[in-house]
Length: 492
Image 1: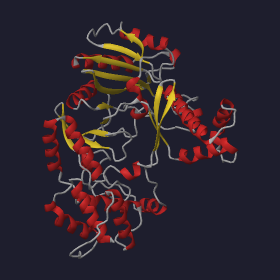
Image 2 (image 1 turned 45 degrees about the vertical axis):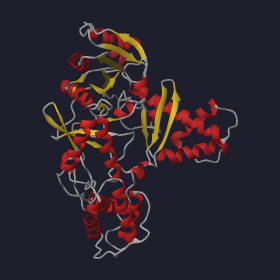
Image 3 (image 1 turned 90 degrees about the horizontal axis):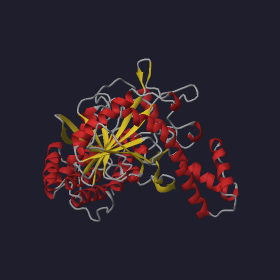
Image 4 (image 1 turned 90 degrees about the vertical axis):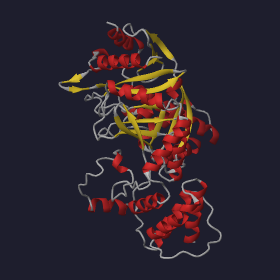
């Protein structure tokens, strides 16, 4: 069957335009070499008809059976990426094609690159399909809930290998550096042979556009700096974000904050996240319109959202940049003891911003989410971080994606919620201790006997309410009057 799988993969490469007919022999021979095969039949009948990820899995199974590789996570990932690299053009060709398609429209260019990243199996579509998605009604509108089932667990042998072969290698410096493009991989470090990036000049620097291998929303992309440097939110950040959406007006783009606790998982490489998706926060209504007396060309609103968000809008990009920078600098030095906000502990800063940019009705729109990462004895993980009563659902940092209303919840919840459903239906489920208070609340709220459909609806609703509570914990202003005190400071 191996020859049928290889031939099927080549046919899919042709169907998806990864390769042209003139490439067939070359690609076939490259794949044979990787599989340590010295020959190929003159004719292969019944080429396997399946998707690229499924065919690739069959080929990897063959490689394990024939001892080409060991049945270890990194070996499988490296060989998979190397096989698909045989089908992917060199970076110069892909960048040239992207730029040619951009002349037609920005959407045509990104559509091309997004499809390429899926067809090359860089975006792990088979794994992503395992994720559980639904929308939950809350007081803030519908929130997106994802239980993340896509990240594969490392097997014991893989973990043993990593410990045994642990070594200091500084290339690439991190998983976001441009040097990952085409990198074969190694034990404990991701295989990127089939990885490609698009060069995007921004304000005199080279930046690079790629898609996330585990997309959480349509066209989930990453824009990364060429230089390996720490995340930093400053005036130039706003300039870059707004310049990017001028170039790609169908995308949003935002940045995680630049401080621990409130920042994302990677703070050592300057990068942003973008994509073609409308998040729940996009549709948040105005809680209060505000006047920024120093910026007459900029409209501003406090959003009706669990986090503390100022939405700026203007047809004038430069005015918007100046307003955002003024708010950032004011916020970085703002303290309010009544709201538990303290700008500094000695020389350590606590206040920063998570910015999100988009085009809306031919105007520039910029959301500034105010963040503070201070900890206390009562809140050792952060005052404005998920509190202990929601840790059974979400304990990790609240980053850009969650801020906008998309929960990324741990895989353990899939089985744990199934047990809770069994318990609510017939009290036979094994409820984890940390969920027991939650289950008692659900039983009190819904005291009548329930059927399976009702329990499914209840659990989705309750997960949505929990996630809303997580976001409320991250909001620095718990009421409008506290927020307005800060606005008054802006207008002095």
